[in-house]
Length: 300
Image (cartoon, rainbow, N blue to C red):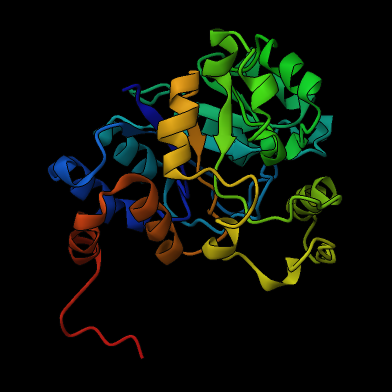
């Protein structure tokens, strides 16, 4: 069977979690499904002007983060998907330093981008970083997705989750196009939401805000949008991609890249995602025990 390549959240946000999890991944591969691997981990530290998608709060040192990815042979991706960048934002010291550092990785590093302005800048200044077209573009029209897949600037393209089940069109893509698609598996957002792009733009404004500037939170208009993320709710989403879907539909159709969202959540729910998508049910308790369970642990 072909391999499913997972792209996991929280490169900076969940650095401490991955310090505990990745040794388990290496030592006990028999606990994990043999048809999947970890292709990349994505995220951004706090205070990045170029950041988008989610407001990042990761405080881990970038050199420690990159050393961990190098140790385990995993590609690191910077989430620089701000959609509102202007020329004056491109010289930002912090973001440029991160790009310079991640260009030195043992494994090719990538940048998740939205802004065409940033694409041009990164190609010229950091040519060794590969680019991923961000889901924040909200590509819901299939012909727009096809055009993005045909763009040579991008190694991967993450379409809007509402195209996840457009099998009548997906099946007719070339294998080269299929290899570039990275499906967002576990989105909880209402499939009928019409303000997804506005939500992402609100995050971009927050990341660009000057000290003391108050940017009101985006008010979600989607069904149950105020309830926050719940994996159980995501599983009921018509666009949800289950492990059975991956094994029985997507891999046989020639698709192999799957993105797990969650860097704006907590490490506990991240572990639930990993348990569901990567770990055999009979070994899930062993993974919990290896990472955090203690016989004297009280939850309440």
